Image (cartoon, rainbow, N blue to C red; front, side, top):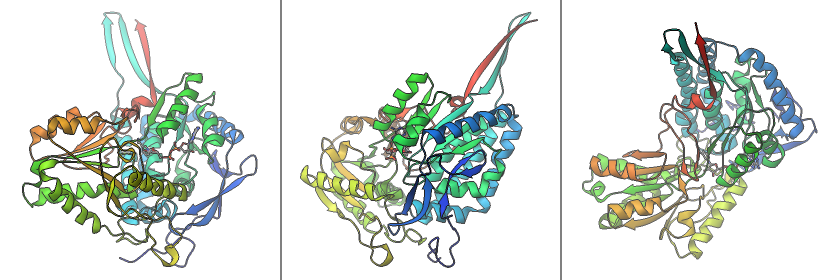
Length: 499
Ligand code: NAD
């Protein structure tokens, strides 16, 4: 398979517009204040389109358009909404390659991932909620001979959604699919680092969604995100991003007493018990792959297994084999289907990661591999590339406690089961974790003892639509995915009737 041509060059399968306004009421509109900002590709560090810079005036306009649409959309049947979600999924599937290349160009992640994981998963989330919706039934219970209680699931109304840049399309779809399925209208604010992937998608699926049901306002956190999260006319705010921003979102929401869903940061432990290294077989191979997954999606994953905990008795062996595995990760042009690690999403993110390389060294951690910016030469010289990096140290160091959001792993050892659990839980976060053992009794007990919303057992980094996802502790409030998610976007009407 050959390298995809970059959008804007000859033979490209995906082309961005040169300018995107906000998507409001089913069409592009210019920002009220007439301001725009440049969108830069991390692949080569160069601007490729302009995007509307939203303010509270644009948010007002989008919220009004959404309420107008809700008058009709809020009364549609589950069947009608389910059918729409299925059509969206089909349309996306027919345009898979285009969408994957467009997202790679904007975010810098390898096209092999957008093709094989990000976009197929997004498609499946639409199908999952289309199915779940059809199976949802209200409850009827008889209280006495003459009295019956009916339960109806109603949409909330207009909801706000704010997303980060690490999975521009998948993070949007995680929120859009259940909200649309439940019959809500939406105002979505993408991250300022990746504003256009979702608008690129609107050019493909926009005609399938009634005007005003989904509105997209781009812009920066304070200028566009805060007016949305604090808007008096929204009935819920769903947010994915940093823990510090999550606190602000909750404060805004408290003013209007609306519910929040918060998917926040993480510092996920990946725990390897000694029996993993007992034989050099396919299980061990899978575990080593799991060890190397800190670099997947360039480490820009909220559940990045950024701390590896290895039992002392096999520490040198497993770490040595793990490092060999990481050496084999192919870094290169994200548009090359052979590339396994691409560019970080923005220059700010690149600098943040490089600063953590210094923090690690200064804090006394030892660099085992990587530790520098990567210069890939040619057109890619100005792109935002970082070497996959492994530090060895102790769990009290900043690089073990703070989220780096890059391909940087911090490794330490543990003596026994209790030591492993205590190190794993010694963090403010509780989003993801990995547990590796051939002994399912050990794996089960560790999985139950680690305080995290998702514990992968003898696997890592799978995100099926039907598995609940969300954080313990400062990693968030509420769950996404799974049929439970519909509950977050509905309220229950009870009709108590005496006949
Ligand atoms: P961020 O909090 O800086 O930004 C996220 C979004 O919030 C952006 O759209 C931004 O414009 C907006 N925003 C910023 N300040 C705001 C404000 N005051 N009011 C309203 N909106 C505001 O986070 P980021 O750096 O873009 O994203 C990375 C973070 O996201 C990491 O911490 C990562 O762990 C987290 N994340 C979590 C999950 C999850 O499911 N738990 C998934 C992906 C990413």
